[in-house]
Image (cartoon, rainbow, N blue to C red; front, side, top):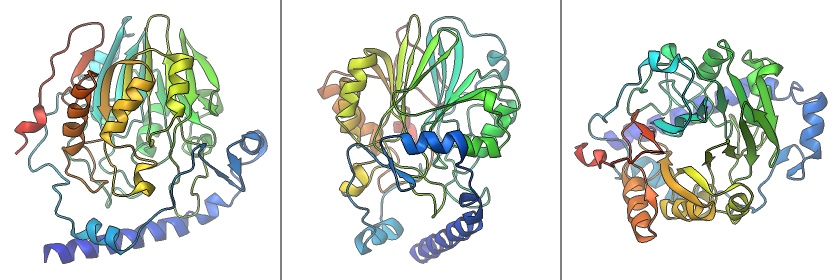
Length: 370
């Protein structure tokens, strides 16, 4: 009965996504990509026939019977069996301008709160209960956010890697837009933000290798190897990117979602070495069609080496059930690979603040989740 229920839920999810895509068809064909935005998209070398493409092409998608069988009937422990330890972030701690230095707090999945050289940034903030177009159905968080969305404040800027629901959350964007937060997004994603009430003056919409100044920071959209889309009719309709943030005293790199690529060596050569690499380690699956765009943990270690990273914060795990592996497999594999390559990897609890200028003691907190 349990397997049958999972199968029926999967069918229902496909139906709802299809319904949502059909409902959004008019929006996607309504000409939101027009004027200067459309001209920039059409002039971009990796854009053709209404879609962006990777410099290193990925293998064709393979959603055959074996994949579907494992998706709906696999025996992996994809969700934690008990509550995850979460350290609450006090809203009052975000009201004052951050001090100099480099600090990071992982909020879950790929959402990371950063304080770097006097600016407070958020990477891919998703604070809603579900990574879905529907808050009544879809992948649900394993744990509460270390800070509730309603109490989130004091964010100077948000960096978005791409428009998938587990990285671009409408409710979070609307909340921060009302506070005057600035947004750095890949080319095309500005159309989403404008429809959610973000003004043109609050946005920097960048193509790969384009930069914008923000206070004393230089923020650059750097390439990665992924894709985009929020429905069935906009596959690769907006650009995806990684990010390099260079301040007067510190440098950080955020991979976004990506498969491994030789382009990370180029990023390291241009902007490295980085004090902190925030790199995805989870939500990979079987076959090249998946790993070409979602690196495995061992590849994350290679990326960290390619960019000249000093310390690695692994993300994109332990928050949503999005892949065909045990929920804690990514961190176990990442730690093993990091030890073999002498990489300094950080394993903070959710919400725990790491000061990159001070020693930090790792704890294997996932081992207590039983």
